[in-house]
Image (cartoon, rainbow, N blue to C red; front, side):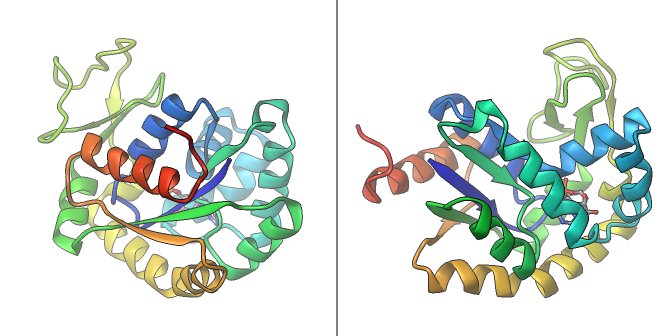
Length: 215
Ligand code: AMP
């Protein structure tokens, strides 16, 4: 089952996608995580994309399409995948269709105030990538990952001055992508203002209704 998750930065896509990936046993592919990993490693790709990522701007389509093509051709994607952060432009959506068939696009929505609150409180483990929130999902010890003991940090682009820009970029570029999947009849809107487990439950219900998942 090939799933795309859509929704503004901070709506919780990564968290829902991770839960769904555990339940459905297909990999969660986050292009943002992949790029941050490359930047951390200082690879050629990392050096190319660093400036864009840190400014909250989109990395050029040609680079991203190559990255995703390579990733979904790997063996762990044979039974499907959950794409998080891709496509971000109409061109990427069209390119993705020429590589593989997307079964469903889950579009997570929540009010802007909820999103800003979630983003500015988000903290991530430097070692294992686990996601926390200083208020809604705090670690047991402040600044330390519950899972691996690694240090938690705030993403450069989760700082307030960059958040507004990312939301603006998202709104401008994603409308055609949403329309594209709506026209194909595979865009499903999910209310993401509820708690994580409730949102995940709504997703599973939709997958069953669409015949993509048996009981
Ligand atoms: P995310 O973690 O999904 O919010 O992504 C963080 C940053 O990585 C974005 O602000 C972009 O700079 C870059 N990025 C991730 N995915 C894409 C994509 N599909 N196309 C272009 N840029 C991307």
